[in-house]
Length: 111
Image (cartoon, rainbow, N blue to C red; front, top):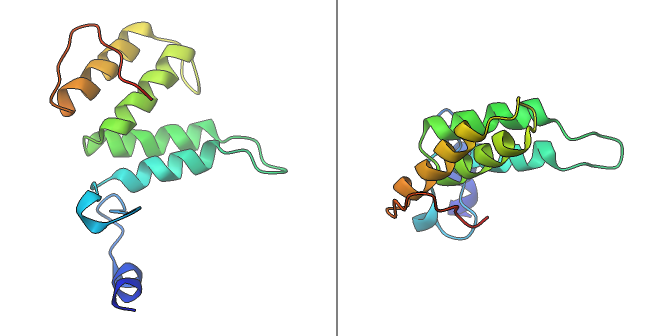
């Protein structure tokens, strides 16, 4: 009961500090990644909303969420919602490695 009350009263301006399994794993801004995933999920009558997903990922990236940089790398690598740019994709992938504490030149992080 206390957790539900806490979730309901939680302020959203901090990048939606959502928790999937346990509070200790919460990453400020990860909620934006979840919202981006939802925007890309195609439902019965909806098309994936790439621009909305991109906007959420940029908000998460501003908060240094590694998963956001990985997904932005995929967007730039494949030209999803943006003009294809392999240089920006590589920079995003390197940023993921730096944020995870493993800066390896040229390494591509797993999905």
